[in-house]
Length: 223
Image (cartoon, rainbow, N blue to C red):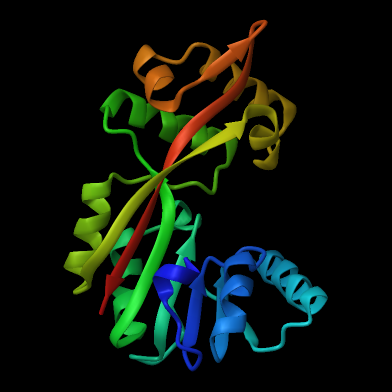
């Protein structure tokens, strides 16, 4: 994301859905200021700790949703969002807000999970993601992502796709759900349709799920 952002050193950067702040921390040494937003105060507190421990001071922290960014028009040269967009309530509105706060010529870089091309596999992945983590809203196809960007007035510069393999149990437990819900997710994976097994490369051993592999979209667009 730092490479795609191509910072020159004087930029004001907005990282949306910053979580624990790792993307903003990677950008901070290369820009003037990073502003982190997240609707969850506990995540912003975690980001503050990460920045304090790293001794990085050019950062601001603000509670906000992607759909209601509390900034003036044309406030940022760079806007980023990494592995947060599948939590957004309204992707089209969030993209319009991103375009609004970007300065002319500014760049938006997003990394998020891609929906499988097969509709049955996509429905399965949405189901298990939502079951594992109720804050999950939706994953989108490459075409949908490009559509959101273009409809908001952004010009596509680059897209890429990478595969990420997840060790199943650590992935499941990070969702923070109760034991009964986690067992339901395990059962759904064990009885996944063949389309999902193929699309997500689901692996099992001795009757237990060991891993799966999903796809991440990297998209860069300019205002």
